[in-house]
Length: 122
Image (cartoon, rainbow, N blue to C red; front, side):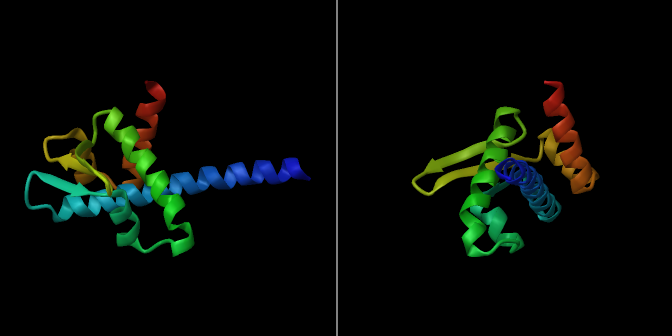
């Protein structure tokens, strides 16, 4: 019985992680569409708060998932770290970046699919 719970929990965690990635991409798409300058800046907590998807109990765990996804995008060169402080990192997305173009042209599901396939190929 414990094995079944473990497998189902792992499956639920995987779905939850993909949902958080999709929420992050939707947030970035919204920010790109409303951008007036060459840079948008944000914190992981702003991503979660702006979409109001989770209650306060899940907020901390989901913020960690968002942060890990953004750190992955930083390593791959899609997002930059603008500032580090006691409150955490401030991430930025430049207009000249390839991700900006993806977000401007494609829907969030397609952007996430592109990012995931590129990650697998590397």
